[in-house]
Image (tube, rainbow, N blue to C red; front, top):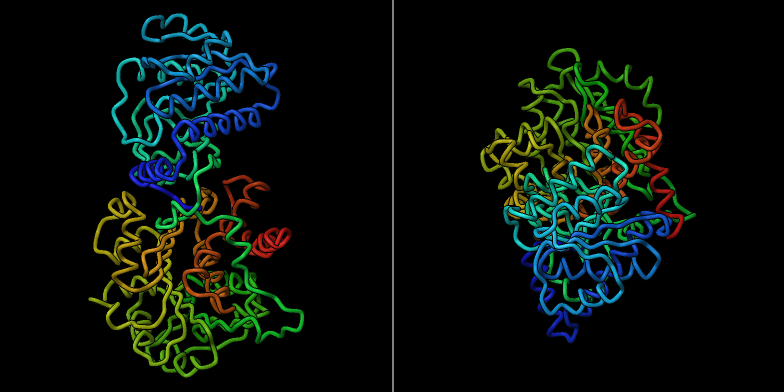
Length: 514
């Protein structure tokens, strides 16, 4: 599913008109789709008073169409007009039905009375146009709704396209922007819905079809990672398979301070179906990890001191490359000098397999000028915002302010696949294509979840998936597993190891309708 900017949405609307699909048809489709979502959200319309906030432009028109349909389906509907809509046929149809219409700027008291008895407010003031400061009656009306919502949490707020005052491109928010319970975005999701701080005001997001031909968005290179795509991307599991059919992963990980990282990374690869996983870890750690990691094989590495990998371990690892499809490097290795020299030396080895680089491998890269000119192998980088900031030589705030653009730009420059972790993880390919995760789960903001993710990505890449596809599928499965655990435990106290048994369950769910 394509994700669009406000300019791209405007171009698509223009192309629809040229294609013979006028805005009046799209508006009718959009309004009815909004009404359907409201009906689905509220269950029984007969007991509901729905107040629809109407602004200028197409978004207000969509709201008027929705009001008409909701009335026809049995709801008690009122309309708050926040702008003058002369010669508007949709407004005329609303009035013909006897629906109460109040001009808020002329009769604020009547608006407040209607608001006091409403069980649902539909915000159809502003859509995906450029963000403008909310002033005058728009600001007043939204503030009044926000006050009632704060006092009476039972008031449902449903936003048409996106909450008014939320930037469609960057997620910036006006102070009056409402915290919606549900946002019904039209045609295509807008980029700002996945950017903070605006993403916190979206609520449950649904995207509705309003009749725009799919091919009009073919040129757009940013997409949402959807369930439909992941079903088609899952590696095949033939009945006559053996462990060699599902790839071999070599994981170079762990140090005396970060033993668990090696366990989580290896387990992540196993749980997505890799055929064989071998852990290359400092020799003194091998007996400890073997007590818990019974399914992996081991490659004990020379140590510079107990639990710390030595530089000469790079030769030991390099001798194994022809036996493995993927090398996952970095989880929990630490930043001692010998560990960083080990990582740097591995990068210089010939005939590298596909690389998945996380944690201390990324911190080592950040210290090597123009590292991408030396590292020509296919690689998937999985930085969190702090690691990405170090790789780019910018602040974390700069990374977070423009996650998509930074990931896209650096993927092109470095010619590597980048997984920029965080709420709504961004996956960027060297050719400019990007996919965004649909998941923001605070339960995943805990130590070790990134190790599980990098292991899952490595396990999928070992099964023959191209780097970008493996990264996208790994991000989706990791997020889906997190959602399963949140449903059971909530979003506090979730541990990284909780994700491991949920990964195959997430795969099973996808296969049900494949």
